[in-house]
Image (cartoon, rainbow, N blue to C red; front, side):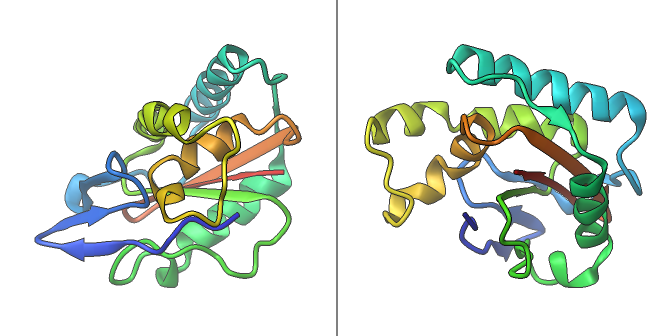
Length: 157
């Protein structure tokens, strides 16, 4: 499930939802640290628990693919762009650092609740709750993330 492409305006990168933005000049790390990895996984699992979804585990393959996409200048040239070659799950992207991305995506919960119970990912409103939807899908059992040059990428499968 790819989230809509993003737009760049006035030094800010606007993501798929109203909460997915940050100043690109924030100086993000070149990769996800072990502490960030633990926080990304722990925060995601706490959100999943509230939605009745089972916990997910960290997957080095998904993390490696996420890091490769974050390192690719095409992922963030002129705004955030999803990897159209990744079709084995869902991908969230943010211009916030790893320590802020999950809480940013969690900020879409109100729009997610308003869209349910029959969430339609083809509906244009998906752009306002899709990151949250990706995090809480019960069929996803693994996640992995990467970060570089003003982009954080998390993949779920």
